[in-house]
Image 1 (cartoon, rainbow, N blue to C red):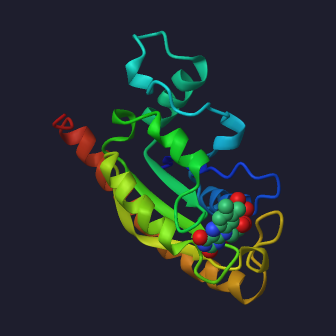
Image 2 (image 1 turned 90 degrees about the vertical axis):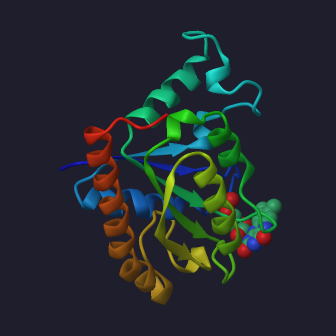
Length: 196
Ligand SMILES: Cc1cc2nc3c(=O)[nH]c(=O)nc-3n(C[C@H](O)[C@H](O)[C@H](O)COP(=O)(O)O)c2cc1C
C-alpha cells in the first residue's frame, strides 16, 4: 500500500546544502513506492508568523496556508530534514511548522539531520524531537544523520564516499521504522477516531 509522505526542508540560504539530504530522502522513499512530496519552506515563502492557520475565520486564511493545511491533513507521515544553526533549529522551517498545530496530530514523524561538520546537526535533531512531540506527532526512534554533508551527498543528492555509503546503509532501517508507525497510526485512526 502506498503512503502519502511529506518531506519538509527549511534552509533559506542561497548556497544551501541540506537540499541534498532532502533529495536523497525523497528519492529513497519514492524508490520504495511511496507517494512523496518535498515541502521546501523557502519556496513556500511564508512571512514570519502572525496568525496561525486556525486563527483565521473558516475560509479566510491566505491560499498558501489553506493549501499547506490540506497537504498536512492528508499526509500519513512526515520527515523533517534539519540543519543546525548555532546548536538550534533553522528558523525558516520552524516558522512554517508553527503556523499549524492540530493539522499535524496523530501521525508519525522522522528526523533526518545534517551539517557541514562531523556532528551532523545532532543538537538541532534533539530540539526538533521535543517540538514535533509538542505538535502532536509521534517521533520515531530511528533517525539518519549526514555529517560533512558536502562529502556525503553530491549536489544532486547522490551518496558519495564513505559517508554516502554509511547513509545508504542507515536508510532502510529509518524507512522501515517510519513505515511501520505510519501503518500502525493509519490502522488505529480507521479503527477508532482520535480522542481530540
Ligand atoms: C548561522 C549558521 C549557524 C551555524 N551553526 C552551526 C552549528 O551550530 N553546528 C553545525 O554543525 N553547523 C553549523 N553551521 C554550519 C552548517 O552546518 C552549514 O552551513 C550547513 O550547510 C547549513 O545548512 P544549509 O546549507 O542547508 O543552510 C552554521 C551555519 C550557519 C549559516
